Image (cartoon, rainbow, N blue to C red; front, side):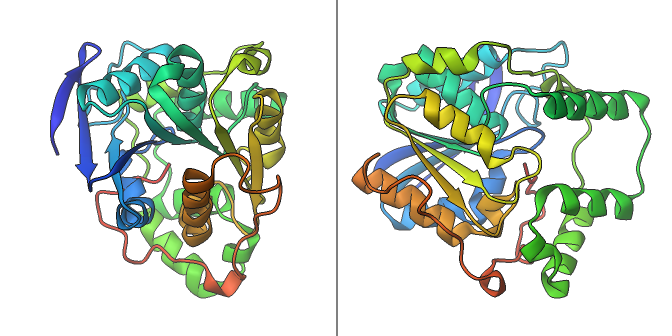
Length: 298
């Protein structure tokens, strides 16, 4: 995996394919390799150059245990795009990565051709604040949860009922979670301190970049109504909700997610009416059985 000195740190990235560039920004506690299961192959086959990377805090990128801000992550993302000569280009983020892309569209609009925000939010409500505080407390306690218990909790938090009710699929996911536990290093702890301050939804009214917001219907971590608030704040933004998937929607329903991405890239923000997307039937969901061992799911 190549690396570059970006924004004062060593940042590791992968650069795949040729054509119109797309930068994929991963969520909290996960590496850019997670995109390579489904999104990178589909985008490359469609004629795109795709760049993924490990965010600050995720090895082998510098962990920066002293802490950092979302502005640092925005500068890292912009710096990598400029280092590779990509701009203006498309940026796609999920969860924390979507927050980064939102702020990037404000800070560096000329660098962004289109923005896609998956499983996002523009404020910290009471439940999200409690979740963040609980995650920090668990990390700081240094308690090591049994692998089987941790895998079960991740399944409940990140997958849809359609997947959880399918014994074959859920067994595949539980095995993947057990094989690929969530990292617990100091960089991950620093990521846990990133919160969305008051007033960001109002700030997003100044975004002047074509934008698609994707919600995952069964997402309990970042439910789609929070993403709809972001879409309502951004002038001209399109909001789509994909059914039959949870927080890992880009892995649970990859064919639908990839189709929506490519439709938006091709046709722009007026391609669909908000809320028109839906996932495939539960039995057609992808399973993670072929996941490479170095993938961290965000």
